[in-house]
Image 1: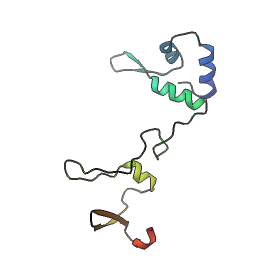
Image 2: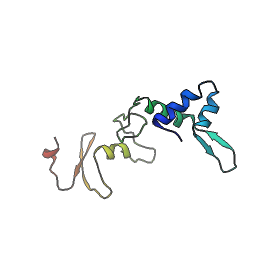
Image 3: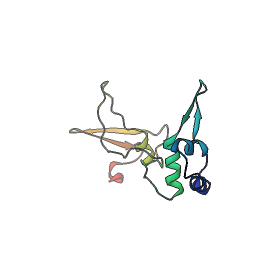
Image 4: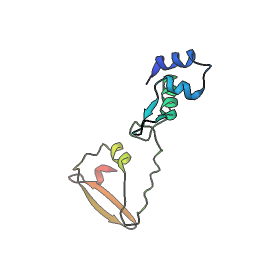
Length: 120
């Protein structure tokens, strides 16, 4: 798959062909298990925008995606899921432990060993 200036040059060179042929010529093709090919337009256009210096924003992890809403919803099984994007923002690692402090309709997670006053 072409990227950067190579992609821009190829797009300019092939400006008179169809979009499908352009995506195929730039290498944005995936071959499925059954042998059929699928054109990856999304990756092509993202690479093209990046090559032109246009940043579409990130979701907090450095990856394109939805913006964080900072709202969590209790799931049908009663669990409250925080999500990877939030733990990445806080640089939390597997095995980090937290004390759960309950208040009136609120939950505060305090890293084990920290005092609540240090986090405000």
